[in-house]
Amino acid sequence: MPALIIHGHFYQPPRENPWTGIIEQQPGAAPFHDWNERVYSECYRANAFVEFPADATGEAKTVNNYETISFNFGPTLLSWLEQNHRETYDRIIDADRVSSPKNGGHGNAIAQAYGHAILPLCNERDLRTQIRWGLADFRYRFGREAEAIWLPETACNDHVLDALTEEGLRFVILAPNQAARVRGEVGNDRVTNKQAWKSVDQQILDTSIPYLRFNRDGSHRSIAIFFYDGSTSRAIAFEKILTSSREFVDRLALAVNGRKMITVATDGETYGHHFKFGDLCLAHALEEEAPATGFEITNYAAYLKAHPPTFEVEIDNGPNEEGTSWSCVHGIDRWIRDCGCQTGGEPGWNQKWRAPLRTALNYLRDENLPHFEATRGSLFIYPWLARDESIALILDPHASREKFLFDQAGRWLSSDDRRRALTYLELQRMLILMYTSCGWFFNDIAGIETIQILRYAGRAIDLMDQLGLPSVLERFLEILSKAKSNKPKIGTGADIYRKLVEPLRSDRVQETMTA
Image: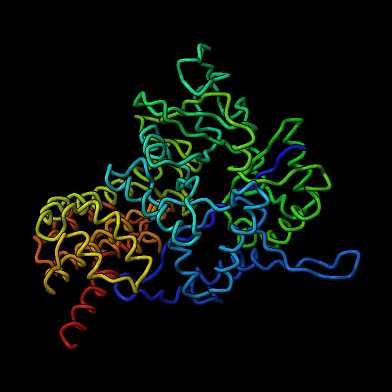
């Protein structure tokens, strides 16, 4: 029986006002209050509670699709679900537990890098924090160690793979266009492989097997890589084959073509949000059509245990070794520069605003490096370790701040020092969240996703002011002024900041003064 692995990447960018923690009304999501609520209704809840038609006995049932697919949820999305829709949240968590004994002790869930940043573009410390926060969030919610982590936009290069290997991950999922060359029949040691490398592309790469990728430090540590079937995944995402579960499974059967396994990966929102009734199609396919066709439904970790890699792979590092992804044919240019990848807009529009936007945020991040490092010895023993471990405070608002700071400082801090230490950590959280990839993905800097990451930047600047750090606002806005909207009336990134972010800062200052 060929194995079938369907992966869903479930994610929404965080939408909360960074000052209040409240999601404001978003008219574009009508009739729902905001986009989280709309996608929740159409997808997240829908897949947890699929009303399955009555069978031959006349008994209807409710199907939880998360019990049969491989999946990851963005940590910030899971946090929102936990707070606002606990019943669905519990179904998602429970699905991992239920799926484990069916798959040899391997649950369906995998982790995700915390803030959905493009990891190859992170500096070294941010890369590690994104991974460690994602793994800690997974451990907190699912009660076990993650075996893999989803890379936002599957953006990857050798440096990212080295980091994942060093953090102890077993496998990762990439797009077929991200493979560069393979060689066969490896042993546990690279030295045993004397075969020549063979260049591959997404047309000739065998996606029915896992591959082994060795760390570049000579330690023989390795990570397995699954490459999803590209053409079938695109058909699911864009070609409307979810209108029929029979057509869906027939397409999978055609693609497997006598091989041992087929895996597909798409945004999880494909099932119900992007395609109405996609959740029902998925349930019917996995409950009836796929088993009847001869598929064995499993997940990556279980398949990897039964089929250890016997081929080695090296990935394509992209132009200038910056990395590659599943949603930009130019590597990862979509999150750096005007590469031509976008989501529409008017004729003549461009995305030249991407470069100065990233430059401005990098400036804000880098200006904070020496200030945070200067807390060494006064507030924290090891500031960057304190940042990595501060995820515990994000996950549990009831956790003792005093005890956490005692552990990180090596002594009890005064109330003023506790306030400053927690403000520094909150500042670091804002600097992490402002790199959410959605801020660069769409067609104009005036989109709600870009405004959201500018809000995180504004909150960071506000916290710097509270700490009495040198002002960065003037230079920050100077750089942002080079990011021009395609809508002349809107102006530049600096104009957007002054109009839509600065008033939020002023409101919070006013509240503090009148409290």
